[in-house]
Length: 159
Image (cartoon, rainbow, N blue to C red; front, side):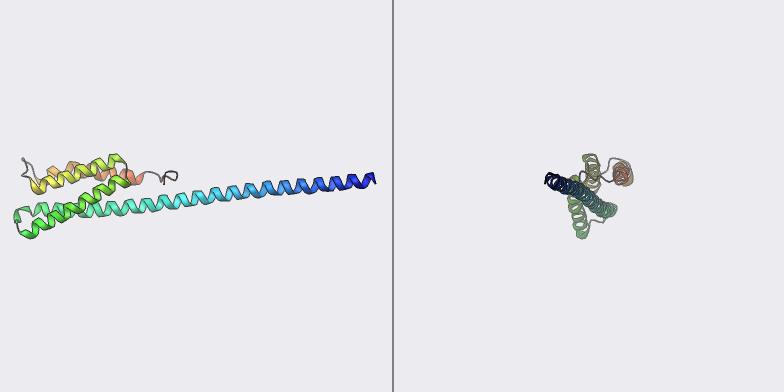
């Protein structure tokens, strides 16, 4: 009878040990799967953010070009010129604010300086130099910083 009790206890111990090990392995696999899923989702969010940033930069550059074109045509003085210039500047200011939301403050500062330079060449008389001389510095600084921002590795944690 004592042998049967020991066999029952050993059998029960084996079942408990097997169940415990099975639980540990299952929990470990589950944690690893959850971690992998979190990384995948973070990568997807980072990539979506990068696409959103790229679209915003494309829009900003397109509208800045429209403002530059309007500045070139400034002497036209037709009512349609002023409307086109106002529309371009309004859209530029919206893009500048979105750059503030989606990018680091350093890029936002450069975007703001570029928009202010465009605003200046549209509405103010230039103190010597050409339109392009006035825009070249802020434009190149912004474009260089935008390129550097997009070249940076994706941030998988912060998205």
